[in-house]
Image (cartoon, rainbow, N blue to C red; front, side, top):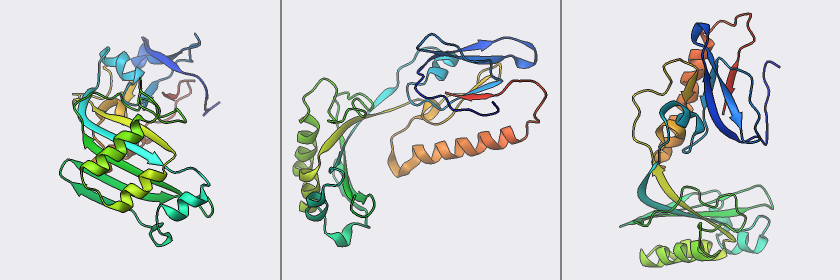
Length: 244
């Protein structure tokens, strides 16, 4: 098909395919399968990008010394929605800045499905894995007990004298996620010499999430890539563009 979405297939690697006109590239999947040959594969596959690895070899992102603990109240927890934040604040985002700590509190969800969310950002020299347990329902730090992230969140709020309304939300949170912020050093180029692979987003310029810079940069990447692709005239071949 001209366009398709393949779900549930983990990308294990990318292989450049030599040929006339620049050749192409193929995706290799964890189940042993191989994709068709694409003219271009765009690696928008995050900080542990397989496309980047294929282009520049193995690498490790650098730990920034910044740790962020996220918490959220239970979906549909009416008591938490009513008690943790006043209804008058449900449409507001509150930020607090302290010496060594930053906190953010906001409320999301539709009528009857309000969830309060908190993010506590602190300096921490102990290396924490990037999104160590984001997919785990209990939300815990890798290699630790399920309550460690909650304990770290409440301890930081107390240590840095954050307001009582911040602690009130944290106390009612059902899940916590512990995130170590990593980054990449700048690259000289975001594409391979053959022109069959390119990078976008965190795969090429992961950075600390201040002012939404990483997300904003990724949107600009997408715009620039779309603009470049719009200039390419479709030929009669069967080649296409793949995204990892």
